[in-house]
Each structure stands twice: as C-alpha cells, then as structure tokens.
Amino acid sequence: MEIKGDSIFGRTALLLGAEAVNAFARLRVAVFGVGGVGGWCAESLVRSGVGHLTIVDSDSVCDSNVNRQVMATSRTIGQKKVDALRERLLEINPAAEVVAEARKYSAETAATFDLDGYDYVVDAIDSLQAKAHLINAVTRLERPVLISSMGAARKTDPFRIRRSEFWKVQGDGLARALRRRFRQLGEFPAKKFTCVWSDEPPAPLSRDGVLGSAVHVTGMFGFALAGIVLMSSRP
Image 1: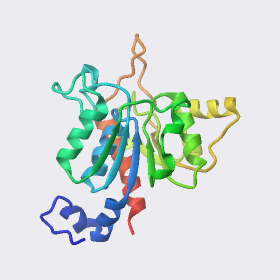
Image 2: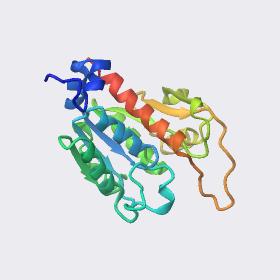
Image 3: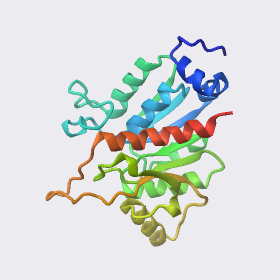
C-alpha cells in the first residue's frame, strides 16, 4: 500500500519506511489492562497504524484516573475504560479494528481468551494473581510474543525506566512478588519475556496505602511497551 506523506501515517512511513507501516497494519495485538500504562500503549499502537487491537479491562473510569489515564476525562467518568478508550482510538483511526473486552482476565476466564490469535500480548495488569497467570499462559504458547510492565506507581523519574528480560529486573517490587508467586505455585514462565521497569526506589506509601502515580512515568512505560512491539515488528 502506498502511503503519502500527508496521510495519517505519512510521518511514520518517512521515518520507518512504508514496509514497516504496512507490517504494523497486519499486526494483531492484545493489551491487558488499560490504566495509566496500558492505555497509553494502546494509543501509541493505533497512532502507529496497528490494524487490530484488543483491549481488556473490567474497570470504569473514576475521578482518580484523570491524572494519568489517557481515556479519563471529566466527560468519561463512569464509563467502562475500554469503551471510552475504543471511542478515542477510532477517532484516531476509524479503519482500525478495536475490540473492547470489558471483563477481567483471571484463571477462571483465561480459556475464553484466544491468546494464540495475537502476534503480541502486552501485559499491563496490576493484579498479581492475574498477571502471573497471564505470563504463564502466554509463555507456554508458540505465539504470541509477551511484553510485560512491572511497577510504574510510586515512581517520579522517567529517565530511570529500563528494558530487560524478566529475570534480570532488579529492585522492582512487582517483579519480586511475581517471582515469589511462581515459586509458591511451582510454575514458572516457559520462556523468557521482555519487561519495562524502573530502577528508581519507590516513594513512600501513603497512610491509606493508595499508590501515588504520575502520568509522565506511567505514560513513558506505555510508550516503551508500544515501542518494543513496533520496533520488533519492522521488516
């Protein structure tokens, strides 16, 4: 497909080449969890021309999401996150196929997701149990490729965000908790997978235990996840 410089993906084609944009259009990607990290990842993928995107999240938009979640505005409070995000993504590229799944991924629902129907699965889940199950499930399949976000909350320095294989992540509380859970279950990921994480020591917890977070960090996590998908897919 010829891509003109003034088309919505023209600047991407100028940088990466028309073959890359055409390759992105053929991709099938699922993003599990579309909060402060996953939502920005989803938007970045659609703005880059990814042709099929499935977004999975059971939560609704609330006031406290507005500081960092791409679909969260005063207008969308109360809407299902995936519905609000799908509407936004189709405004960006009406030709994209965006499937909104307003439900949880869990051990009980896992069989209802066609995981091997994707080229990439992006894990931006914040539930430890669901995250561990998804990682184990995807790494046991021949495809898709799994890319996972570790903890973005309680971090302030975007320049300390890193990329590495899961077992090389250091000092991240979520990665530590995942390793502990894998040992408890006696089940470990069947193959290596890439993570986005930060080596910044986390800020102290608030008195009520709510995790503070900032868009300049969660957004960078999401963009980094999308970047790994896109750069890994170039011809």
